[in-house]
Length: 450
Ligand code: HEM
Image (cartoon, rainbow, N blue to C red; front, side, top):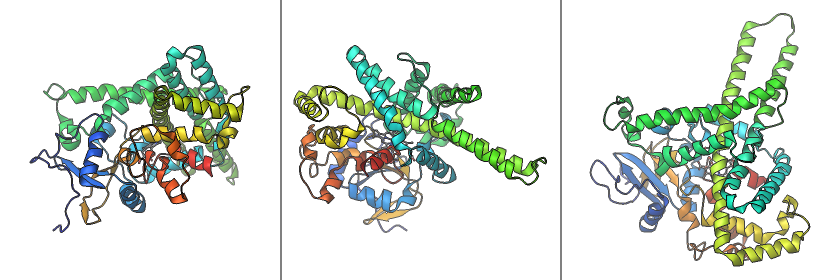
C-alpha cells in the first residue's frame, strides 16, 4: 500500500483524468503555468496513463541524471512506434542493447577526433547560405531549410542537394513535419496509446481515422529512411561515394571483415559458422546505421531550422542587437572576409546572441518523453513505473530568478560577470538539449568549448 502521494497537479475528472487540460498544441505553455502553481514536479493522468513534468534544473538533474538508468527508457507509443513504423528511431528506442549500439555509432560520428573534420564543411555551407540570402532574401525560409537539411545530408550520406526543390530534402521536410506536428504533435499521445486494443479496429469502423492516417504516414516514413541510404549504397557500388558517416563506417566494417577472413588459418576453406556470424553482424550494422543516420538527419533538421528562424525573428524585432553584433564583427573580423570558427572566441556578443536565441525560444520546449522503468519516490512524491516524464525546459528557461524579464530577448544577460556556478546555471545549453539520455548535438558544443 502506498504511503506517499503522487506529485501535485491540476485536478483530474473521474476516469478520463486530465484529458481536458492536455492541449494538443503548445503544451509547454499550460505546463509552465502548472509549474508556477504546483511546484518543481507536476503530475497529470489521462485514463490512468501518468505524465510527469519536471520543471526545475534541480529536479531534472536529481531524476533524469542522478537516477538516469531508471529514466533512460523511451515510451513505446503505439501510434508513433508501431502504427507509424518509427520504433527504430533513436529517440524512441527503449533502453537496452539497440539504444546502446545506436549511441555508440553516434559517438563515433561526433567523437572528439571527428568534430574538427566537419568545420570546413560547416563553414563553406554557411558561407553559401549567406550568399544565397544576399542574392534572394525573399526566399529566406527555403534557404534556411536547404542549409540545415543539406549539411546533415552531406555529413550523413555524402549527398549534396540541389539548390532548390531537391527530392531528398523535399521528402525530409515533409516527413519531419509529419513527425513533429502530426504523429507526435501535442506530446505524441493518441487515444490508441491509452487503449491499445483500438489498433485492432476494422478500417471501416467509425473512429478508425487514425488507422488510415497511420498507414499513409508509415509508408512515407519508410521512404524517408530508405531513400538517402539507397542513394549512398548506389554510390558505394559505383565507386563514387565521398566520405560520410555511413560510407566511412560501412567501409571500415568491410575492411575489418576482410582482414578477419585473411587471418583465418586456412583461407582456402570457408567456415560456414563464421561466415554466417559475419553476415549477421554486417546486417545488424546496416540496420543500425540506416536508422541512426535517419534519426540524426531528422532530429537535426527541424531543430536547426527552428533555431535559425528564431534567430532571424529576434534580429528583426531587435535592430539595436543587430547593430551591436555588426559592430563586433566589423571590429574583430574586419570587412574583407566572413567570420570563421577561429574567430568565435573573440566574438562574445555573438556568442551571447546564440545563447539568448536558444533560451528565448527553445526549439524542443518539453524535450522528448522518457519512461520510468521502476516505481520511484522523490521528495516524498510517488512516481509510478510506466509514467511518461517530460523535462520542461521551457519552464527552466523562463525562470525569472535566473533570467529576469525572461520573456524579453536580452543577449547582454550572458555578458554580466558572475561566478562559475551561476554561469553554469544560466547556460541554456544545459536545459534545451534534454536531460539524462540527451541530445547528441550537445557533444558538438561540449567538445567545442573544451
Ligand atoms: C538547436 C538544435 C537542437 C536542439 C535544441 C535539440 C534538442 C534535443 C532534445 C531536447 C532532445 C531530447 C533529449 C532527451 O531525450 O531528453 C534531442 C534528442 C536528440 N537529438 Fe537533438 N537537438 C538539436 C540538434 C540536433 C542535431 C544537430 C542532431 C544531430 C547531429 C541531433 C540529434 C538528436 C538525436 C539523435 C536525439 C535522440 C537522442 C536519444 O534519444 O538517445 N539534435 N535533441
